[in-house]
Image (cartoon, rainbow, N blue to C red; front, side, top):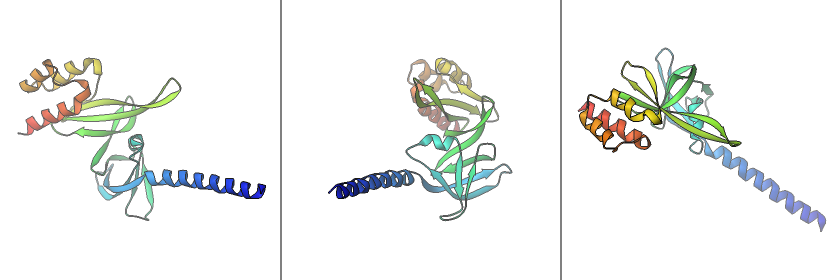
Length: 188
């Protein structure tokens, strides 16, 4: 009787461990994408993406030519950019460290998101910071407290955007919408 109960418990434990391990493997998948190396060559293939942990994409790019092929992992010092499932990550220098930043808006002024892990009350959290970069310009961090002033300086050529900022139509919370509106207006 004790042997049957022990055997049943062992089966349950093994099943639970297998379920967790299979779930962990199932989270990360490969999607169509490309890598642009330091010489500017584009290498098409598949890039690993973990939809449950977006932060991984800010740290490295795992590339393979096709399913079953050798996997190469690139850090931000080894490539210029990579794209996975339509989302582009670009290598930039942030506070003296080369990191991947996600491009959120493309145009006259590009908008990027950087993610860093921070320890808050013994809990590891992911924090987002935003950066803007005018064509052939500096890569500048957008500070939530100086958001309006920083953006007005860069987008001062569009009076509708400046007025919308003054009317508080755009705030730090809808920063992507603001940059998309500005970039759309500058391409028309």
